[in-house]
Image (cartoon, rainbow, N blue to C red):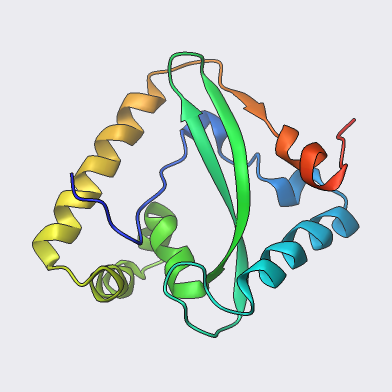
Length: 149
């Protein structure tokens, strides 16, 4: 599969709803997201657009160990964030806009979009066969000294 600047990130169903915003105190979440915005210099870390930014959690998946590890929190514009979460975006009725944005940012065709989405869906289905996912958020402690109880 081709590597794109903007890609889809499919989270295994077992890991849905376990995002940082839901487990952190609001003041800690503000610290994390504001750090991401500051590092980005007010621009989307993918497309470079100066826009209202949203915090996006980047996870690494180890399918063999059923381990979801937080790698970073980055600043994205709304359009790039919608592509990252393509399944949710499609459910919200914005799939066409996300497809157009994917093609624009990656300078690719609609066929390329569908091929990339197909690969992402295959990965998603494979990961959903893994049971007992564990989440590692040590990145928060290492970077911010935030420890969950």
